[in-house]
Image (cartoon, rainbow, N blue to C red; front, side, top):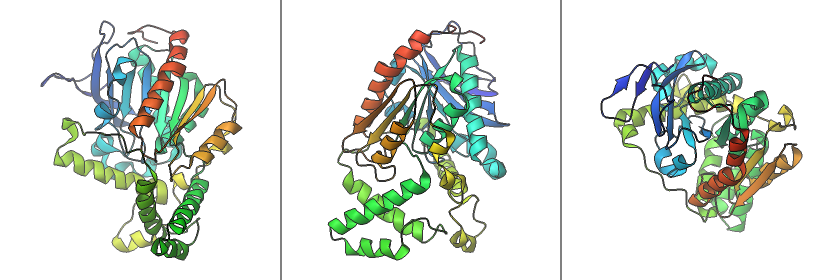
Length: 363
């Protein structure tokens, strides 16, 4: 049960979620005990009889809760949408602070995700839910469906990362190629100076690479990023500061394995965090649920050919690959629409056919 729950009605606060048995629309937000700490979730939908869609944000640490209302506008008609500020992200981080430092592991994050899915099943009376993840969330999503396929109708990945080291090497090579073809000698020299990955230290190699990535991702993507607006509830300076601090905290832990202790220590950080060791094929090629991947053709972080090769290599009851023209690593309006179409046409029928207990069930 939620210990702190704020309903979207002015000044109405209760210590636990109200029963949703008789409700049609649903809007709940609050902290839920997950993995031994309080973690922030929001649940929104126009009809709680709809399938539940759990969205795994990227980053790590880039919670979607502040932007979900605009990014997924209209989706609440077809799905009950669930946003989760993961361990080390946004309001969850605001609740715990850096005390969770030792728990920032791939295993613990996967267990957290499974606990969230189990909670949603119980609370909303569903036999299974749908899982969607983007970028970092696409890594976490694959770990979750491998561990507990019984919880999910299907998985949909956006900007799917497959193997962090291979993704990074392919990205570096593509940037070097593009910079060379445009006669950007300054960038070519900078990239050649740091050499191709793997890099032992986070700086200066990562800083040089990331600068080039930002410049050329912006130029390479002809489809603009999806337009998003921050929810007023998250717009205050304290919320923004907490969000930014959480981003840094999560990024350092998953890229470098730890937080820097000083400015001098920052320069000594190595690229040795859990994310740098991700290799999804090692988890196995057999999936018990449908797998769909939506990838931007202009993505320079998670190159589409790597994701497509990965999908080709796996076995699943159903699978599909959608390439969205002109889209980079961040979702464009076209990618959001394409993903929604897949969810409506390919995934929602599975959930409706699967049936399960109705709203308000204790199962």
